[in-house]
Length: 227
Image 1 (tube, rainbow, N blue to C red):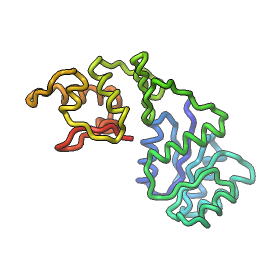
Image 2 (image 1 turned 180 degrees about the vertical axis):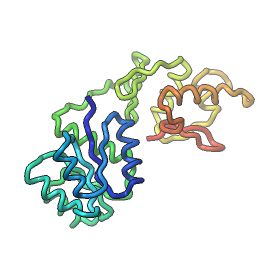
Image 3 (image 1 turned 90 degrees about the vertical axis):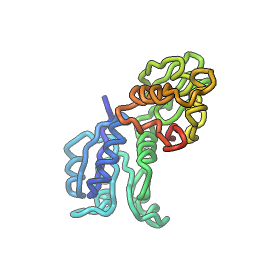
Image 4 (image 1 turned 45 degrees about the vertical axis):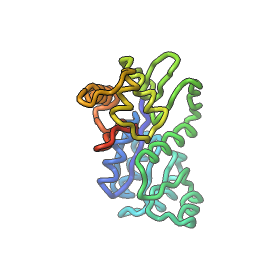
């Protein structure tokens, strides 16, 4: 069963982006647009973690935090544009488990959710093989030649496996079509050959419904695996 995350923020766009990334990471998401609604959701539903914005109407995040901590120890990550140390200390002293400053990378938010869920649920992080390459929720075991995403196996051709191995060894690095072709097929690159484009398209579709979610096209240069 998926853990349920409450996103409490009056900014609809922020809620939508966070929901997209959290659902992609396997979480169930519930949303609240103000402090009073946040309290109602926490009282009525079994929430595993709350991302709590500070500047909300009706009740602000600090008021919500004080009230929740009177009866509930649900993990709470405060989300705020106020990045001063005094604000962070205030939030943590009121009972927040973590503090995330806006603007933030949604992947960092997911990572913090993962960490706090593991801590709260007593989950021991999976130990990766020394032969494994790990990037985000992808793991490539080079001994067994198996790629998994979130623990689910993904079938790869031999060329796709060699390409993913190169990309995952250097996440964030841009590789040209020539480098990708020579890695995948072990032959000299022919500029007119569209094998790389076809292969990368198929590989992307195996990784995600969003073609740019993992492997990003860098126009005029090549491809890179997003960190």
